[in-house]
Amino acid sequence: MTEEYIFPETYVEDVEGQKYVCIKNGTLVVNSDVINQEHCIRRFGLIPYEQVVNYLDFTEAKTKRSIVILRKNPWEGAYQGYIFEENTSICLQEITGSAIFILTREGSIIGKDDPVAYVVTNKLEVRNVKSNCEGLVAFIVDLPWEEPRKSILVVSNVYGSIVARESA
Image (cartoon, rainbow, N blue to C red):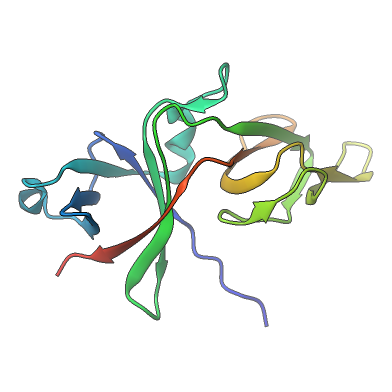
């Protein structure tokens, strides 16, 4: 039996969204009610996962804004995740091939030279891809419109673990 993959939700500070993470009184609350946002010390808006690349500086390898990544735990009714503050250093690794099979997921801790993917080349060769980075896998962004196909692995050692509750 395979485990069902639950896509993480991506929130960016001071961005409008249909859903928000609000930090107030030292707690994180996830809700979609703008009225409940009044007393937020910080507010993060939900964005489509792939758009996270717009908030990463690929030249200087850092985040442009603060980003929250959450995965809902359906058994607990809470969210668990990570916060990456603005200007957090990141390690970027581009993975290219005709077909890409990722072996890790967001939230995993990886070491340098750990296997992270395998790719099939245009010559139908299968190649293993080892990590250039070590730390927490923050994002794995697939860019299917690129030819050959491309994915970007984003890893960081600087993050905060967080728990958020859903607004009542």
